[in-house]
Image (cartoon, rainbow, N blue to C red; front, top):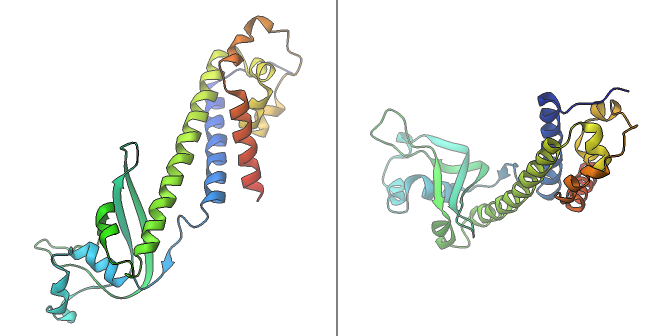
Length: 223
């Protein structure tokens, strides 16, 4: 079989495979992160939409003047421990008393937003508060997963960039096959000349970590 060169197209396919593995781990560890919650979180929505200082106006404005909201997302924004901005969304359905806030513009305000500190200061019994805080925690986990897979992608691409061909890459680090599509594995020339003089390339790569991550992703995909 012919030598398989490391082309831009192959790199694109490697990125596709890595993103698939990333999604498998995310879906396994966070199966509910994209789900809509059936819960009447009207008070929570109204507080985030109108603002704590204006939400009392709902009691004096005729309800027929307001536009009802039965399903919508509520978001919370804050910072991670390392200072990065993070936004978490949670969509609620089945709201009975949620209303858009009138504005001077042509459209009404229909989004609901809290800072993390504002959300934590709300009464613990408010429907939706605990669920939104849980979604925040899930997004923190998702961030960790994304950070790890970003590093894996960077390490794999740097390693491939140092190799003369995919054949050499597999010879130096057989575990790289876990990050290849079947079509590329099938094209590999297994009869590779000795490349002992280039062995130092793989020594710069965390092969054990990359292999473990690939195996974990496969297990997550199979579960």
